[in-house]
Image 1 (tube, rainbow, N blue to C red):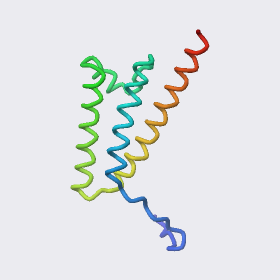
Image 2 (tube, rainbow, N blue to C red; image 1 turned 90 degrees about the vertical axis):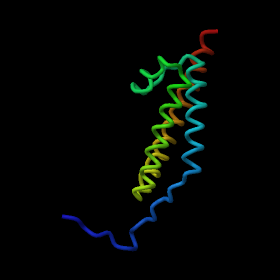
Image 3 (cartoon, rainbow, N blue to C red; image 1 turned 45 degrees about the vertical axis):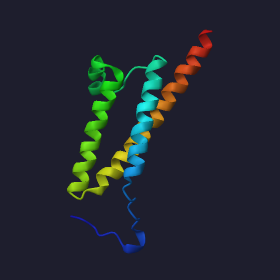
Image 4 (cartoon, rainbow, N blue to C red; image 1 turned 180 degrees about the vertical axis):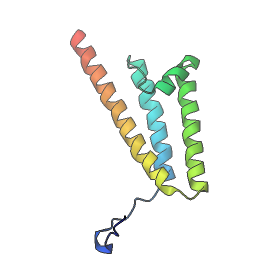
Length: 111
């Protein structure tokens, strides 16, 4: 059973932004590469296994998959997928920044 939401309570769904998606992809690559340089480990098991091919190659393969997902979402008129991926990538980049900060702070205590 579903209950209709009154118009006065409905929120506008965020507009999917391919520009934000591309920017977040670039930030993810940059923050991941920086984190790896500082000694952090890749958190994704999938990408972790791909890292055998090299960090940049693994990240680019992951980005190609992400772009294919977004292309399929747009082709099948599923803009919410793009919005969801943008929120997810925002969380991933934020996590990367936290890991970088914690790595730097823990390294500062050793010296």
